[in-house]
Structures are given as structure tokens and as C-alpha cells.
Image 1 (tube, rainbow, N blue to C red):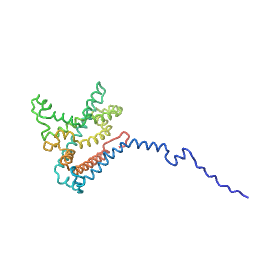
Image 2 (spheres, rainbow, N blue to C red):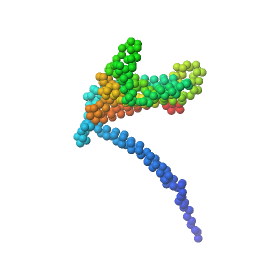
Image 3 (spheres, rainbow, N blue to C red):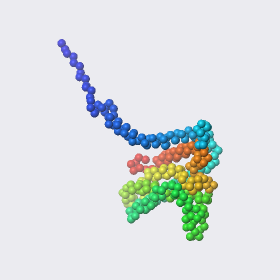
Image 4 (cartoon, rainbow, N blue to C red):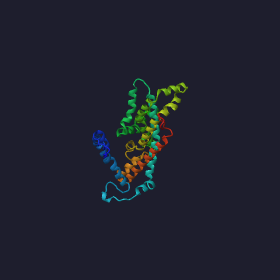
Length: 324
């Protein structure tokens, strides 16, 4: 008589190992919930202040909403705002031209000034910290109304600039009221606020290995050659970062144009920036549907410009780890 034995069945395991196989530990789940609780104010702000208003403005861009009318009178007009913008609004294209001139002149000048001052301050001398703070101060003030008003008074007919020119027998003029120079004053104001990119350039210069400069000196390279062959390649990621930020910032100029022109974009629309034209359409002419369409075209344009910068950056941005 034979006895048949069954293979022993493995007992179900218990404990932390089995619990981890069945799913995430309870402690980890609790930590995840706690994280979402702490993030909830930011998520709520993102939804109420950014996401929902963006979706509403996208809807309004296809309507004739004018702020003063009730929602029941809002009509869906499809692509009419976009058609009018591109074909029947000369002021729109003038604002585009003024904004492009401002962005593509002010941005390289601002970055050039920031890099030049950063190179000068990248030295050890007495009072270096004080000078860095003083150069950063204009950017710390930002595009405030007070700074724009002071700038307007400097370039007025009776301002400080004309008083300085008068010492040399040069007769000045109302620079902010002359169509040929009004936009130039805005560009100078933007360039003057180079402190933020200067600090970033200065931080990048501190990361350039001194051994590279020593090797270049051994090869007989002078200061200019070391700048071209060592400083610029090693600083290219920082240059790219500043270029993207300042280009976007250049397209978004509003406060200085509004204050210097008295909110009109004058004289003769010479300072009519895109954002100022958008403001006038939405809050002066009460064409909020049209202004919403302008805002979405503006958003897509900035996104396209940023994409182009990233696509072209691979040809001249070099990283120390070789991952270009």
C-alpha cells in the first residue's frame, strides 16, 4: 500500500515584504496625500488664476464680447477676429513692427552690456560686492511705473539729459515726444536694466575652469583669443538661457511704453507695443473678444520664437559634459 503525498503548498507570507508586493506601503500613500495637500493652494491658484482664465479667453477670441454687454448678448463669430487682425487692421501690424524693432535691438544690446559688465566685475578688488549690487539695482526695481516716470522726466525737454547737453552748447529736444527718438528711449531704458542677466553671466564666469585659461596662455593666446576660444564656448549655455528669457521679456514690454506715451502709444504710434495695443483694444475700446484673439496669437508667436531658439541652439551651445 503506497501513500501519495502532495507537495507542500507555500504559505501566504505576511509582513512588510508581502505588503510591498501587494501595493504601495500605507506610509508612502499617506506621504503622497500629504504632498497633494501642501500643493493644493498652488494647484488651486493654477486653476483659478491661469488655466480657467486662459480657456475663457480662448473662447472669447471667437466671440464679439465687449465687456460692457451681458453674457447673453455674446455672439459666436468664429474666426472673424483673426481675419480682421491679419487683413483689416493696420494698427495691429504697426504694433507688430514696433515690437519686433524693440525686441531685436534691445535684447542683444542688453545682453552685450550685461556680459561686458560681468567680465569687468569677475575680478577680485575692493568694493566688488558693492559695485555688483549697484549694477543689479535697476533690475531689482524692475519695470515699475516710478522708474518709467523718472525716465520720462530725464528725457523731457527740461530734463536732465538736455541740461547736460546744454553744458556743451548742444540744444536738446523733447526726446520722448519726438517720433524719431521715442522708441529709442524705451530701448535705452530696457538696456539700462541689465542687472539680472549680468548676475547670471557672473555666476557662469565663476564656473569656467582656470586650467583652461592657463592652457590657452601656454599656447600663446591673448585676452581676446581666450575670450573667443574659452570664455564664449564655456559660457554658451548661460548665454542661451539669458537669450531665451530676455527675448521673451522684450516681446512683453508694456509698462514703460504705457507711461512714456501716456497710455496712447504715441507720439504718432511710435511706441505702440503689441501688449499696449492689446490693452487699448480690450480695455479702452472694450473689444475684449478681439483682444483675446491678439493674446492667443501673441502666446503662439512667443512659443514659436522660443522653439526656434531651442532648435538653433544645438548648433552653438556647448555643454561641458559633451551633451549638446
